Length: 141
Image (cartoon, rainbow, N blue to C red; front, side, top):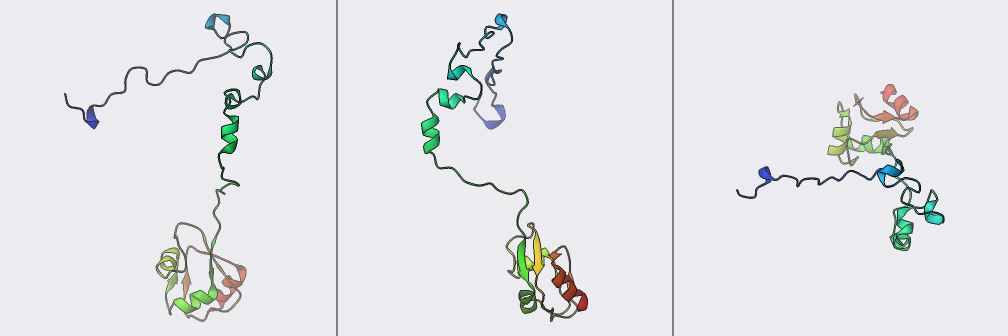
């Protein structure tokens, strides 16, 4: 039999069940639950890394600071750039904004900002957020 991807089999007992601790003396890990008697290691809140002497190594590794928000920031487009790039009768939507190079990604939120008037006639805006000033200028046209 040849060794190919379709006839790979996991060896027996690859995934070992975790040891259930603190389930009575008959289980073999009752009373002290494998932590010994007294001391820091027997208390709760002591990580296994600290007990294994890995805390120093862990502290030396550079870490990414801050956090990444689940809600991404809006990609901002100004009314001036729309006036410069769009022509009469075109629609402003995420795909056209990406094609014209005003925005990097179509799947991230986009918002049009600005209080100036839109000079392009008969322009339609679809699937894009707008500030109040931008809405007013679009309605005026």
